[in-house]
Image 1 (cartoon, rainbow, N blue to C red):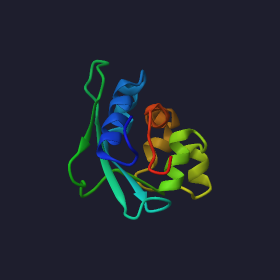
Image 2: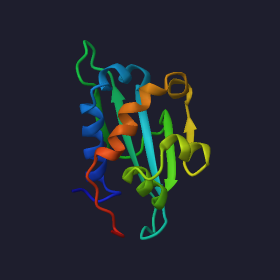
Image 3: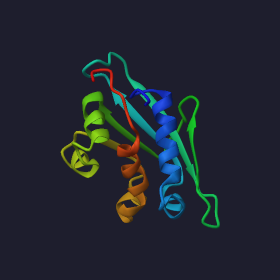
Amino acid sequence: MPLFPSREWMETFCERVRAHPDAAEAAEALRGVYRFVVEPAGPLDRRHAYDMRIEPSGGGAPPDVSCLDGEDPSPRLTLTADYTRWRQLIRGELDLATAFMLRRLRVSGDLGPLLGRASSARPLTDALGQVDSRFPDG
């Protein structure tokens, strides 16, 4: 059970996105680098940022979903929230769309593909709750 936030947690998240039944179809719309930023709150005293690349493989094969070393200079989309909000999202206590509308989650970058086809984000939103996670504050 990986600790959130950590590289191990992010790698497990990437595996869950890749394994999602709709991942191959959604990868075309999601193609690019996504940055997940966890701001300090609760037990975290420093910012954490993780990048994930999604590339379609073609022919209905699972997409290439990988964690990147270092930060990409120009992610397609950046999702930023404090630790408490991310924990709520992962535990299913807060919906991603609701968090965005209530400004508990900041999203910057190219929103077009996600707004045009909300179902494209399903592999990402489903995978958040599929990682069996540990948290520093229990």
